[in-house]
Length: 483
Image 1 (tube, rainbow, N blue to C red):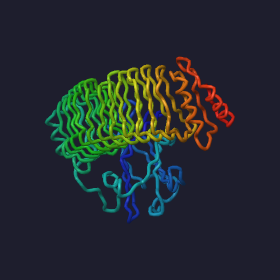
Image 2 (image 1 turned 30 degrees about the vertical axis):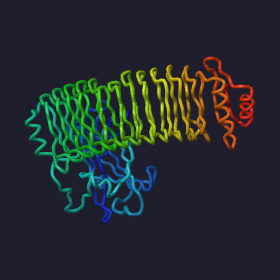
Image 3 (image 1 turned 60 degrees about the vertical axis):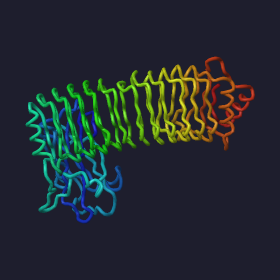
Image 4 (image 1 turned 90 degrees about the vertical axis):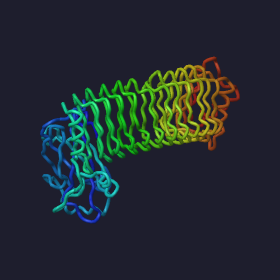
């Protein structure tokens, strides 16, 4: 789903598949239009343009067509690619076996012809066909089969009993979207029978306190559970994989969530403004894109996470442990954080660590930093990288160490770097500065075109005369060094 700010539109590609053995006649396409507040654009005339590109997202347009359609009361619209008003090309002559193909989508929310690009996505065959059940190929006499409705919507003054019956009658193998939105009497619900979904949306339910998805294993686009002010318990006991977004926000009474089986999330997992959610357990999570914790979790442990980025903010979290992580990044602004552990981290992605309570950082296995990296905090006095050999992949990356109390810092294994070094306003002694200069000076072949700032050390530390001679040699070789 992509938000187009100029039109305040949300757009969802629910999935596109095609046969590898026969040319398709048309494809089903389902979309959802919403405003910036996540409200459906109900009963609105819109225009959509589909373009099929060859080879890449910027490839040649082989075919283009326009559609005029209307959204329903939930902002949903359904179209058939291949059956619009042709603008160029011949749909039936596309040989799908020759290359990769991409769908570019344009939208005019007013129903005109001023199409704004919403995004481009690749047509995939077998992998995506396993889960995009309503985007199957349409041919003469065809059909998707299966049971259940594509969209299951629970809203309004529906009761617990009515909602349970609706789930029983409407959820099946065809179900891709479950929306539980703005209910006023619903207090408890088990969404049984749903094993895979494109989107699960649970928002603004005024009385909902218990919610469970006992059979849901995979979500291919988004889970959004937000602004449910009476929600206490949320249960996903079978969830294994999510893609794109898993958002849990503004549920002020939520105190328990079960994600014990979640192992992979290729997008973002966000826990934000759930005031009573003091503990989040993810014992099976091995890989994620980004996981975000706000200030309500005093201790964050991700025991088997091997790859991902972790963001933590606020003044409650005191410890972070990722004992299995080998590749990842961190964005931490938690002034109470006093303990940080990533003993196996080998490759660092974008990282920024700031805490007033943290006194030391150690990265015993880190050999390679591939993006910006910085740390700071008034209490930080020791940062160690015993095996770090490579820092940054280009000159736009920054490597920043900044704390008025750091006295213990060295780069004993440094062999190459592209990042700009900024080590100002620390408390480096002359011996520490000399050690840094010696390590950089001894890199072979000699460095050139690099930027290093080691000036303004608290306590007056300056490089020795011998180190200054080496600095002048490096400056003569085309480097910028400030000391």
